[in-house]
Length: 570
Image (cartoon, rainbow, N blue to C red):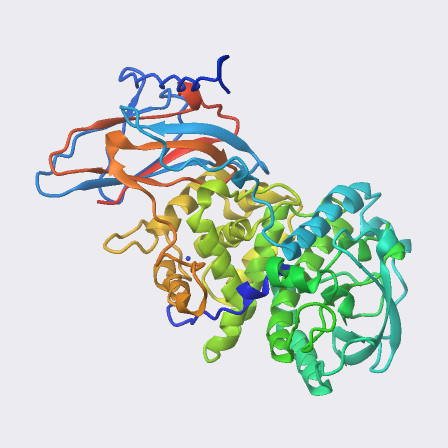
């Protein structure tokens, strides 16, 4: 997984665990206004505080009527959440949400924002590998591994310390086979299921033997057990009984020093071609995880200190190891396609959280190393949910979208695992990994709840779960996080950065608040994701109408499950 170093080093304390124009060059005419809502075709929305509805705009022609505020002493407020509640990767639908009079659009996303493309070179490389697995290697699957035992190597003895081996490593961000570089490396530590090799040409002043032994013990005694309990076993196509970790400067050199300082870097990766029996002989024919080496003197790219590496590599490993396990379960064992990208990423980011929680109580600093990236990604998503997908398409996944994937999986686990213990949580994630279903279909199956209902509830929970002064229904709550208490810890660190602060808000999800008849949103609904607005009525205020439709009042297609989720919060 590619990581931007500026994102992985912010520490988050854990104390609050429980976030065209016509000829002549004139000004083009404004678009025609949407037609007014017809009260005959519309639907009246009457909600008490804490009650909610998820409304499909098909039966009511997108017209909704909110009655006047009967209270003469208190305000009425409704959270409005237009959403595309579909599990179809990359689905998009243009929409408007307008009050009963026309008003300027408050927040239309720029045309380029909805692509959700990776925000740095490390993320682009990570997504290239996942895309290759889905569109090239796995697409040529001939038969399940179980039906082709000849592709497996005979059982071998594991490597021993001092063994020397050559590896083929991606030498640029395209990972073309013709540009693979051969690396000679030596096994420095072998511990149970893990063998760590270090490039013989690694810079001096790297990890000591003691540090390598400590990493090996951490992988074997904690991280390996977490991933394999929560997701299942990895493959062993080379028969050597271990996962090999190759620490090589070739990974450092995937980006230049300038690129590293401005666009991020690749901390480590896994590539499915290494274990796919159809292609593995062209690559490394075994289970390999690649990582950068320590380079305190910046001889290869930007500098990576020993201390930084010791904090970064375990988090990257537990993330990428989930990808390795998933590829084995879905492609080698199942003989099918890899997991859908968005859910595969969500599972790997969830593995990071599981790794961090294993250090609690007692080691908040290491916990923060593991979860800070997920919280940062979540901040970015909640700050811009209108322009980022939950169900993003293959090969695309910004940091914000990975935040959405982790956040959604966290919500589903909180709601449907038997309890919050690791045993119950791992049993739930394992049921996802072991299913032959993919994407929204597997989440729907393991939760025994329609996928649209899950994302509707999740979208509301993101705002109301721990909203001060409001008690959210149980199905709209996170059990494991209080994001309104945790995410402000990012904002509190703004003094560490040159302006502008990357976390300017105490809580990033801040919908516009207007009178009901002044609500005006327009743009694109992206698969699984949502926009947010709050409609308020003063004491004794009149009712209002809302039109939820396509541009110009056109009917929204029901193909991708458009929804207007409404919950009364005051």
